[in-house]
Image (cartoon, rainbow over all chains, first blue to last red):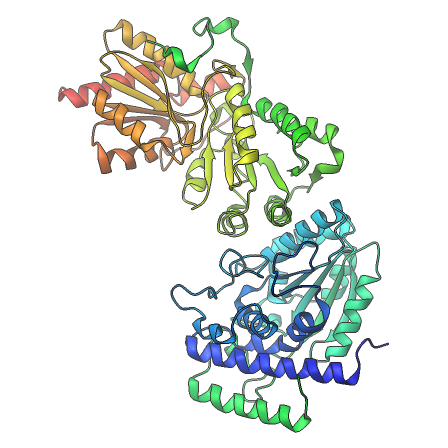
Length: 285
Length: 334
């Protein structure tokens, strides 16, 4: 089953490409930041901001909106880029990333930029806040849904499982978590650092509905989001397999790009290749 | 002499006839009162609803009581999420675990996020008693003081604890309130003034030679000490610093300047607590000798409350002696 037309899908893919280009521009300009995860999540953030979320960039505090919580705040560039393309703030402002006085802090802060639902970066703190929001929405019969994006490295945090246990036990079905399963963290692969598997079985044991998708197949991801909406008694986690650095073959899968930024020369070259690939597909926004 | 305007209990020094209650009982009563007025209030507890006195709220408003289990980090994060959606969450647990165990979540998701979560630190001080050092929070004021945006209130008795809760409902700010388990004299009244950022004189002699200032139930001992010192011919002032942050800096400076010597009083570590806060004010403004009645860089231990307060020199006589020392240092005779 699919909820997308061919044109919709092409549009979302094109936005994902634009998001990647913007991520590279802003990171190169900033001179520091997290490249691999930001590129790897571009398809999913395109899907969220341009298809899934019930939101209004002109009214970021809209009552009853869907809320997207980014737990692993270090991939802020992908969120900022998606928000800029969605119209939350002028596109040129992305170049202020990590600068003194910028609304685009190195790790996102809710008090700095309207549209950010939480302050994040310290790993593990996202799912717990998302569960609190889901609980508040349920108490108030608010129709919106709560989405929490996490990294796979965060599955090593104790608080992630405190929150997972709570959300599962309380049956917070308006909560959908997305795990960026890219198998890397700052010191190496998740397998080398501390194996987090079997993730699906762990969440199932915590009373979650578990869905496995490819994080670069946008229609598959959107299908999973729709499936999650139909589950009425438990939260859903979508474990999305992604390739860190996706879209830039030179760095795809290389964990050393977790926490570093491209040079301006690299960014220009990689952006040109991304744009060429997009134009070859003929996608239009 | 007692300050009439502060409207303390009229039979203040008849200790045995005063109501004795714990400040945690003040939370239990006030949060139910507040819950009737404001449906945004929710209470979260980490498997300690009875002993933190959240049980009355749970029974009155079961739909607004959230049991999180033994998971203080999650409790803080949940509360931040609830607050972001318009709730006024009160999180109640033992202070060694909240804000002890969940300090980072409080820092990131509450203080830095500027969300109006109310953190109720229960079971503070050595007077927690038989449970011993693991459950006697002596560090919580320091932990919370270093966080920007955090408001901190340390009530002196059950009556003031109730005022602190009602204040916190409406202040729209991250707020830490410190509570005791031990039953102590209720010596303030409904009419005793209470405002955040405002320190009140409870006692002020015409020619004060030592300013006693502190927070929490030991303030009652400060008043007993004031009476003894007055009889010795040492005039004193007693200042209630229930508002640790923001602190009434002007009033602290005034009391220190008038007396020329200061004693700080708290059931907390000497490092970074009430005495530390006052010391920061004094050295930057009004350098005068300061003696600190506090726990001197030790952990607590098992015992009953009275034994422990005596063993750790947190009582009336310790305050009297500290006042004599402070005065002697100011006079250059020590």
